[in-house]
Length: 289
Figure 1 (spheres, one colour):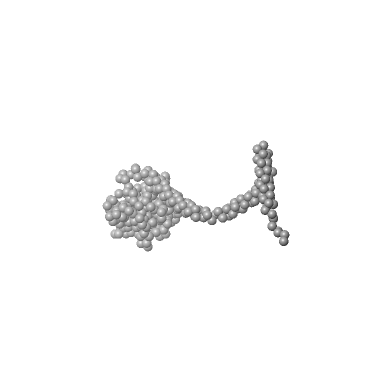
Figure 2: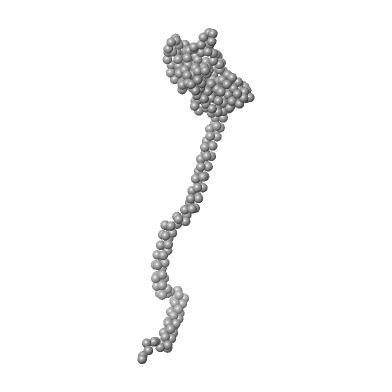
């Protein structure tokens, strides 16, 4: 029977020929590259390998771009927390600096008010506001141990606040100008004005009535009213029981006239003043000893 196997000698010849062909191709390659010419075999191989490699690189880059955020999420979250905390800290510092700047400007302005006075007024903080049907008052952070006493006059740099009605060791209650019990004598501060003296007596409203003005008074809207510096009997009092109010230092601004009309039931006029002091925003005051 004829065998189907390839003779061993033939297999060896095939292997020998492949080795010889490899040696010849290698020698040819070395010779062509040695003289600076392009090796066609290497060029073909590079062309065959280059395109798949380029495609693989592009696909890898696209996948990295689409999935890279998965690996950066934790780092981004940590950075966001850090930035948020920094923003909150900067906002807090900005608020503190704004408040300090406001207080600095206020104190610098107040220095021009306190230096000319003798004795020097006592600065105090407003710690509470009491508005009831009977009284319109504030509580300040100074008391008898600081030299504050009943009827001490209280003002700001710009105008009159009221007078002290009650005193404890460390605090004092101040009746505001808007309270009927805080009546004060006032006069028009305008060159050529005559008979412009009356009583500023609050009624718990935003505007302070100025009563007991003479009929021929030439008070008019826009006039500035200041403390007259002497006491007067408040309308409604009697000779036996007069409603006297505290004598305030002369010339403290009280308010600006908004309207003027004849006072019903009397022969005088009544004006309404817008207080110089914004009682809703009081933070610091000065007590006059």
